[in-house]
Image 1 (cartoon, rainbow, N blue to C red):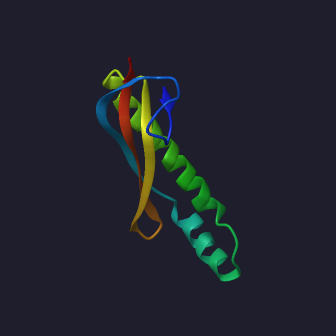
Image 2: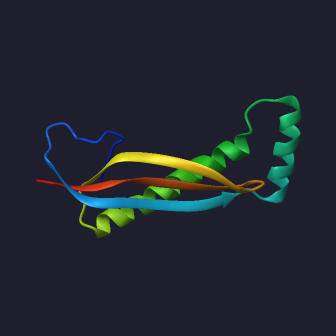
Length: 103
């Protein structure tokens, strides 16, 4: 499955199949959340949250690809990610794009 953030794939004619998306809500356990709170005092990267967001983006992307495969897509173009806080220490990540088939 080709995944791009452009609305085209060089050298390919595309048939639009429709919008596909994948989402997940991720959180870290209380111990990591507590340590992240301490990290905000001294500054710097909060690695636990960085890992959490990377895992969430990967899972959301995989779910988007699964939906595209079910539609018979060859690729997903114009892929975007959006994130929103659900509650302290938890975030929703959505990956979405347009499923296409090569002509």
